[in-house]
Image 1 (cartoon, one colour):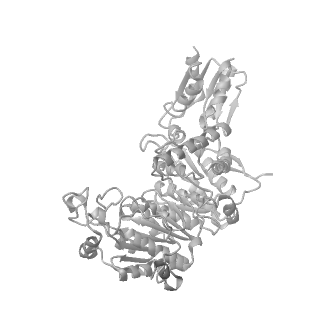
Image 2 (cartoon, rainbow over the protein chains, first blue to last red):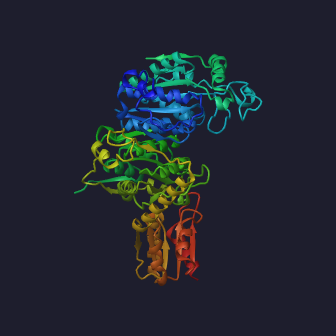
Image 3 (tube, rainbow over the protein chains, first blue to last red):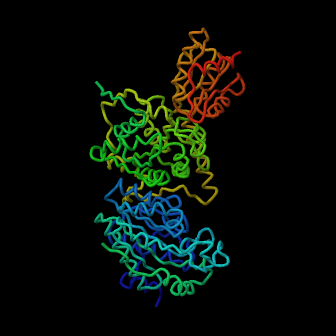
Length: 253
Length: 360
């Protein structure tokens, strides 16, 4: 049998969502961003809201998120995505506005903006990628870096006396009355990716119902920053990240 | 008859915003300009024109809200005073880099640091020479009265949209706080409709991808140096066009002048009294007021040079605009400077005395 005998519509079992562009991903092989991007694009496509959706990308590896998902995008300054999204949703209340932010962007430099956007209950979806490290700048400590974790700026491991403690932003956010849905998910395997998809869809549905802020943390890997193979990185995530960052829905109103 | 109301310069900014069809205001309180947001909150324009007014958590958030709104083709603005304006510089650079039309009002107070809440013109460099990182320019209008504050809001938005560039109203605590009669526009300008935004800005604004176009990206990022250099060259060309077409200035008794004062904002008001004193004493003194601080009225000043013996700039700072005047004059005649700092405001007599010393 020739290859062209197989490539036929009736044999198709899986297709890339048309919302994912054909641009070659700049993310490292094994990085969680690719999976989360795909899930996000699928949700927007399946809900049929491409023309009503505007994304806000952060600074960090996912600064280039706008290269991969075919919706209008604004690239925000470091940490400021929730402020940018605030204006977009206030000025265009019928649109679906989401931010896509890493742990440095959201927990460190943008801590004030995310707190206040959530506290005001801005009608947006926040996708928060927690991989416990600064990926793009070469693997420095993030607010979510685990105690003892070695990074470029914690070469002897994160020491609480020197660097403080891993920041559990999602637990803090859940305290804010403006949020309607706060959850911590992961993409460590197929079942968890499915759960994440459900959560992201729920977030966008909340947005359509003007319910307030939906906040979805995704415990992710950065195998390059962690200096591990992709498979080892997911093992490390399971053993080290998940005990600290417990999965599950914190709030769903 | 147009309606006339007695109000502060800061209140006039708020009235001007509503009457010229602004879509959004995002700000953070700081003296001496807090009346801008307070007035907007009292007027509740969201119930009439649909304008959004939001008190942000910081100046940093405010300017980034402006970035978001401007990216969607909306007429959005913020206002602040010097320390707050410093906090906005990162965002200003991003707005210039993403070529977004918007309005930033700075009601200047004395610095450096937390400084004072009294009037100053110490942000001339910061407004006109960039302020944030990289090579960029803001279009800068300098009001000299509450009426200017009211009128310049719409004019600044028009310039911002004409060039897809941040525009500024650079005022000071005197103009912000002083009360004068304001003539309100009889015909209020409506906000852009969704159809107008779709028709005019769909090629770049983030208003939702439609089937007839690729998706839009608002960004100031280009990692390839060739791309970034070309973008910089394009920006500089735009600034050149602005310099050629948008210079605004006015003069007071300058036609037959042998000596010229140059001052903007409240110093133009005080300068008029100085000229009157000089004229009463038989000295042919005139006054030039830059209305646009960027683009600077370089050519207008150069035209005056042949008839002049000297020029003195009068400023509420340690001598900032004087540098642009010296560049324009290029050593042909002496250029001196008189200013007060830290919130002090000179009297006309004090300036006249300083002027007499320069012509002895």
